[in-house]
Image: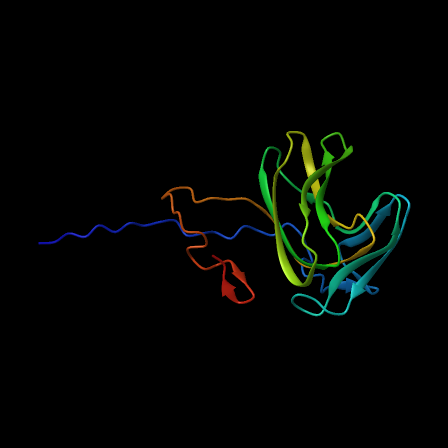
Length: 190
């Protein structure tokens, strides 16, 4: 008699996207709901709600013609986060220049602070996925992830995701995306 053992591994549970209107398709008065524009410093920047996107029919674009200092970007509404927790951000972009990912934190005493996450050094004429991972400080309540333009050129963005990073609780599964739940352009990731 042969007895076979069955190894049961936990299913990958897709976390909840914290960014509302993540594909920027919903709008009010011609502007994407839950999004605002921002620019600071000495530069000449313009923002556009564009009629084409990575998926759907909308995306966000910022263009800068002159720059002495500062930056320009679109910003999603603040989202609640837990302290000392790792989060993963993804989005799709096209750009004519290098850009960067930064964070705006709101702490428990309602003060703002900012953090650099990473450079996005590749300009791209085709939609390209960018992924950034960060861990929140101990005194943080909310965050805004900002894909920013820091010099002359343009940046177009779409399909944003911000999720708490998770790993299988047990089983030590070494396969990424074992249940094929995460997809990119209709094909399973990894």
